[in-house]
Length: 407
Image 1 (cartoon, helix red, strand yellow):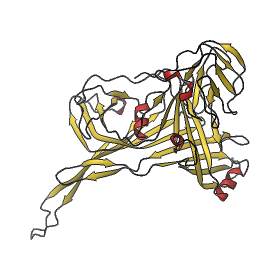
Image 2 (tube, rainbow, N blue to C red; image 1 turned 45 degrees about the horizontal axis):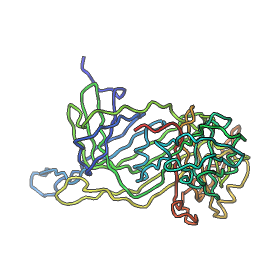
Image 3 (cartoon, helix red, strand yellow; image 1 turned 90 degrees about the vertical axis):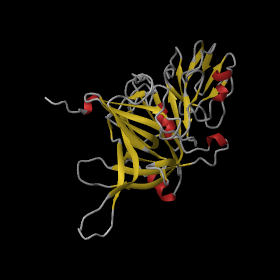
Image 4 (tube, rainbow, N blue to C red; image 1 turned 45 degrees about the vertical axis):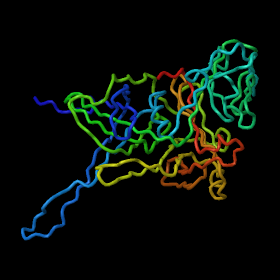
């Protein structure tokens, strides 16, 4: 009986390139958890327009080539951090050591403050946290595992974190061993390309797609569903062999559980700077697009580089229709903000903050009887140009909260 390739036996892995479109000769690739992929290599071919008496086509010539495609996955802690950072063309800023601070000598909590008995310092300094940054507290008290947000108005010091009033702490006397868990990512300008290999292990076929530059990311959070995400890439070339073409030994995927919009002890869903009240959101989708373009040149089949364009942050909300507050903002062209989280059952996960959004469309209809009326809302993310802190004049922040980061 012939052996025919099965999608259930496919393994995708990736490695960062030192030179665009060139498979690295050193380093270790990383296995990637996926639910599907659409990696592809296409060659544009032109047929001759030459006129001849036989009425036949005299030749077909390759004039361009490109690798492209996407990867679909279920969101899980740490697994996609490298690709998320590459999408935002930046790197994670980790608090403490690998995203977790050393234990403070003693921390007391009021509803709106955390106070360290001894000033924090170095990588553990609370003063390095940004206004509006989200973090999780590991503390053997009633605040264990809770999500908190640093005040957007009061900067933290080495001894005091003033909390957003919408994330109050339980009052706790001085207790030793409190640890802050957080890392922050926002957009930059450092572009990274990867070689992504798809291994059809049952038939021994390995296709390596080179120059794969992260172009787009979509995150979908919905009630009754696991959080999903997808990445789109724009690349250069593809090569095939019967063995892997990547160097080193593959690094296994992380084993954290899949996140959702209802998992964990904390969940955040805010609009306009405060938790949403008076109605409920059924789903939210976030799109991030780098507007990449392929750069071609004579003497090279395929791209010689990938250019980046204007960042486009957008998304949608499906909201139960309960009041007209969002319509009023839409009609008056009043900007707002969106914050949402996706965590696993242990509280590890991510908080997405879009500090300024504009509602680009608002629609609600009664399509038929015996159905909930839902608002279909589309939004565009804008740079927070009015923020007094230059480092916070961004369109999106992603705060990673949870266990220590393992490379």
